[in-house]
Amino acid sequence: MMVVSDVFAHVVDALDVETFLVCMSENEGKNLALTMMKDMGFQDVDVVFVKFQGSGARVRVRAYINRPGDKYPWLDLEDTGEEES
Image 1 (cartoon, rainbow, N blue to C red):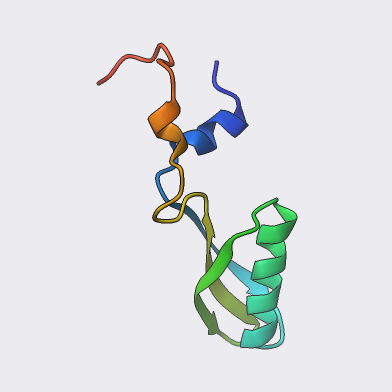
Image 2 (tube, rainbow, N blue to C red):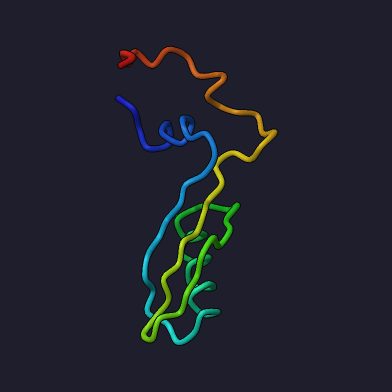
């Protein structure tokens, strides 16, 4: 059985999260999105998109699991016992 932390070993590059945040400005939306990702435990985060729309901001943030040139964990993965499809 795969646990959550094992899943990230299979991520090639990054994880994107998109949501609408209630806020007063585009800058506040950006800061809230970055704080949200940090609170979820991601350290290497970029704002990919932000657009203020009246009552809040549509934001897309990217948490990098692996950057180019990193030591890629999937190269060291042992057979997980999963069948290839």
